[in-house]
Length: 308
Image 1 (cartoon, helix red, strand yellow):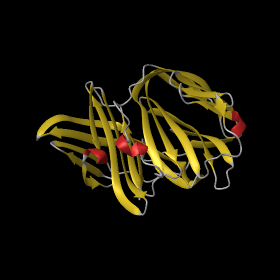
Image 2 (cartoon, helix red, strand yellow):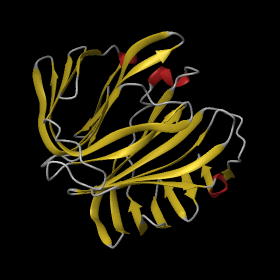
Image 3 (cartoon, helix red, strand yellow):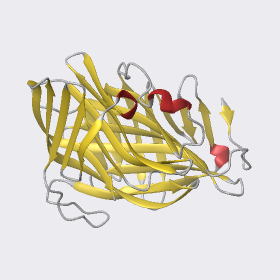
C-alpha cells in the first residue's frame, strides 16, 4: 500500500471515489480522495452526504493511502474497498461510526469512457466500479442510526484536474418491482482548444447492458434539467424528471421529501467549486428499440446533479 507525500509529481490533479448506499429513502454517500494544487501540495479529504446534512472533512496526506489493484482506500481509521466500508470519525460537526459489508459488485462490461480513456490531458475521466451491489450493516451518525438490512450500493471514480464546467449526472438503481440500474452523464468537454458535448450512459436491465456513448455515435436530442433524450442506432432512451423543489438550506430538506446539499468539486486540482447533489427525485425512464418499448419505469429515488 503506497501513501502519497506532500509534494506530488502531478500538479493540478485530483482523484476521488463515490460510494453511495441506500435503503428505502435513507441515503448516505462517502467521497474519499485527494487533490494536488498548482505548486504540488497534496491534501486528502472525505465528503459525506446524508439526508439531513453534508460534511467536508480534511485529512493529512500522510493519513491517506491506496492499493489500486485491490481498491482499498484508507483515510486514518476509515477504510473504503470493494468488500465494504468502515468509518470512525469524531469532529465538532460529526460523530460517525459503523461498518457496511458489500455483496458482489456488478461493473459495466468495459470501461465507460471507451477509447476516450486513453486520451491524454482530458480534464476529467470517469470510471464505474459497480452499477449495483447489496449492502448490509449499520452506520450511526450524530446519534441517528442508518440501517442497511438490506441496502443497495453504487461506486464510481473520477480522476483529472477539473470537473466539467457544465454537466448533468443521473444515477438510480431503485425501481419498484424490477431490477434496473441506470447511470448517465452529459458534459461540456474541452479538448485541445475544441469543445463538444460528450455522453456516457449505462443501463443494466434484466441481466443485459445497454450503452449510449459519444464513441458509439449517440445523438443527444435533449439534455435539459427536466428531460434527457438519447438516440443511438435503433435505440431511444428518454428520461423525464419531476420539477426540482426549491433548494434547501444546508442541513434542511426540500419539498418535504427530497434533499439537496453542497459538495465541493475540483477546479485545476483545488476544490473551489460548489455543486448541488439532489436525491430522491422522481423520474420516468423509457427505453425503446426500433419503436418497440423495452421498459417504462418510474422511480422516486433518482440521484441527480445539474450544473449550467
